[in-house]
Amino acid sequence: MHADRLNLHGMKAIYLFEMARFRRTLWQSLATPVITTALYFVVFGSAIGGRIGEIDGVSYAAFIVPGLIMLTVLTESLNNASFGIHMPKFTGTIYELLSAPISPLETVAAFVGAAATKSVILGLVILATASLFIPLQVLHPLWMASYLVLVALSFSLAGFIIGVWARGFEDLQFVPMLVITPLSFLGGAFYSIRMLPEPFQMASLFNPVMYVISGFRWSFYGTGDVPIAASIAGLLVFLALSSTMVWWIFRTGYRLKS
Amino acid sequence: MQPIITTSGLTKTYGSGLTALHPINLEIRRGEIFALLGPNGAGKTTLISILCGIVVPGGGQARVDGHDIVRDYRAARRVIGLVPQELHTDVFETVWDTACFSRGLFDLPPDPAWIERVLRDLSLWNKRHDKIMTLSGGMKRRVLIAKALSHEPRVLFLDEPTAGVDVELRRDMWTLIRRLRDEGVTIILTTHYIAEAEEMADRVGVIHRGRLVLVEDKMTLMRKLGRRQLRLHLQDPLREIPPPLADWPLELGQDGSLLCLTFEAGEEQSRIPALLRRLGELGIEFRDLDTRESSLEEIFVGLVKES
Ligand SMILES: Nc1ncnc2c1ncn2[C@@H]1O[C@H](COP(=O)(O)OP(=O)(O)OP(=O)(O)O)[C@@H](O)[C@H]1O
Ligand SMILES: [Mg+2]
Image (cartoon, rainbow over all chains, first blue to last red; front, side, top):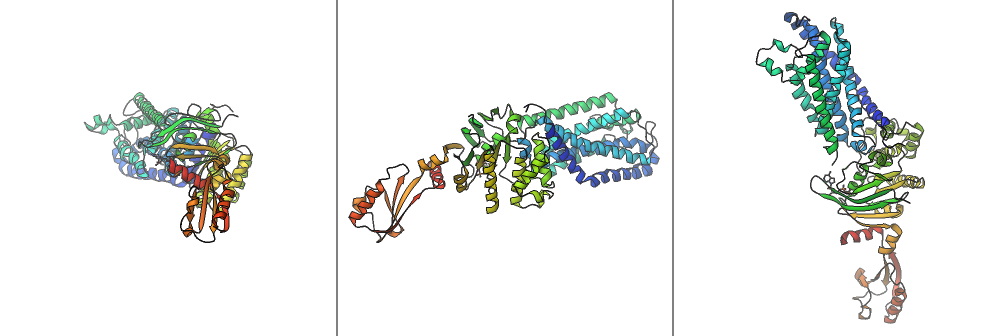
């Protein structure tokens, strides 16, 4: 047996374990975003949207689709990944992960891969639901797909950190509810920041989530609040920061090993 | 033969500042059953956890099957199966799934026939589709053993395997452990039931306050440290030891009706006839006599008191 080969069986075991967890709650997982999307369309798209008119040449209903998808993908990535690693910490079954011949990188890849898979699926479900309500165009489908995956991976990685850091299940909710949701709402999920008066427009430039949403909207309509390069650069910086944190966690055993 | 586990100067101080292990030098022989004894908080679980990769070692080194547990952790961990002290199990997963998961985690391809054998050995076969949360504590303990065996370990750590386990399961477990040993698996177990160590182990290590106070072949240990006692049940109680017997290591018990002679194992045993002759001369008669050997338990209590 070669000592240092990749532990593919181990990665697959973790990935499938996580996916099985999602499958157990498949209907709840899917029903929530579908119903929420439908509700947003009724409220924003039809009721209010009619009075807003077009933004950047796109109908308001169509304008909010990328933001809606990002809102779900961001929170779901954080939630899935943080729950996935927090659960074994909570039940104590983490002993097995720690004692297995699997490297930190492989462990993270499997957990984060599974969490990202689920949020990408959810994002696509929302896209499909939205297309039932309005005709949708995606200007750069390949960019859209890759960007979606990149966002799901980055935020799942961040979710992994939250799951390791959290001391209890309440902590898990903290970041998605109190950081990501407000930043998404303020980051142009439902409007263009150019519609804001100063100094709020300026302030929005310091909102990292704004860059994320803007980039995704660009892949749909070719326009965003900031140039696409800024969005991608922002995401890559975030990914690098999260990766460094995870590397540090495993190096020091922070809240995993004593 | 090269030992399967070697630790040299292995230490651990927890973040709280508590030193759980002072330098530990230990060798575990291939294929033996090694019992690690020690009171609560002695450091047994800490030692096992370091060897398995769950706790970060402080200083020193350890090798499992020739592989350094830090530098070459993959190779070291591949050979190890661990049954933890606490019942840390999954909740919603089935017995079958959790066993297959463990096998995959340890980088082995699926082998349903092997998992079936393990589950049958542990009388878990007809529970295989049950969710773990619906099982009793003893059954969960079996599940943990099944998980550890699912990846065919060469070294099996059992951290207090019989805590909270009924007589039947305990017997099953010992049968299984003996069979594993016959198949060449090295077994390291901790227990508070000294009778178990006495019955099962080839060698015994005693750990106390983070120090390994003794490692010894079980038989040698019992011979070396075991005390023997000759107990004479007297016809007529004595008030005190008669002066002519003063230089004998004698004690009176049971209101003077029991006379005990204690001697260390290996000590000149011909003292018994001499004592009996002496008693005859003094006219002290006895109804009955018996001899006892001290158990590992007494040895253990003695050791812990000393250190
Ligand atoms: N994570 C930890 N942080 C700080 N101290 C710890 C930690 N784990 C164990 N200890 C301490 O280290 C010492 C050794 O504990 P350990 O669990 O190794 O003992 P043990 O011999 O297994 O005891 P028992 O028979 O009760 O299982 C104890 O004093 C314990 O309180
Ligand atoms: Mg213990």
